[in-house]
Image 1 (cartoon, rainbow, N blue to C red):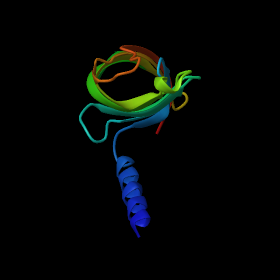
Image 2: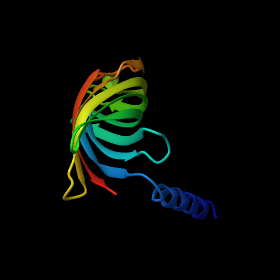
Image 3: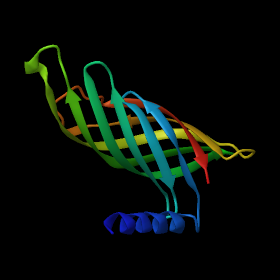
Image 4: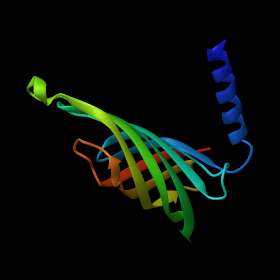
Length: 156
C-alpha cells in the first residue's frame, strides 16, 4: 500500500507541475560527474533547479543531491543568465590500495551558482554553461570547490 501511495503522490505532483510555467529535464556534466537535472518555475516566482548526481573513478564513488534557487535575467532573444544560492548533500566512498585507506562519509555544502543558457525557439532544447562555487561545511575527502558544468535539457 505504501508504494502505491508514493506513486500517486509523485504522479499528482508531476501533474500539477504541468499546469503553468515551464519545466526542463536533462543532464549536467561537471567536475564531480554526471547529474540528472530538473528545473521548474512553477512553484516559485523565479526558478528551482534540482539535481541528482553521481561520479566515480578507480578509487572513489560519490552521489549528491543539489537544490538551487535561481534568478533568471534575459540578455537577448533566447539567451539568459542566472544566479542563485543553494545547498548540497552528498555521500562518498574512497577505496585506496590498502585496507586502512577505506573511507567514506557524508558531505554538506552551500552552493553558489551562476551561468548562461540558450533556449532554442525551433526545438524544445536548452543548453547552458555554469559555475558552481561549493564551500563544504562537512567533508573529509577530496572536495571540488569549483565546478564548471555543461548542460542540455528538454523543455516542456
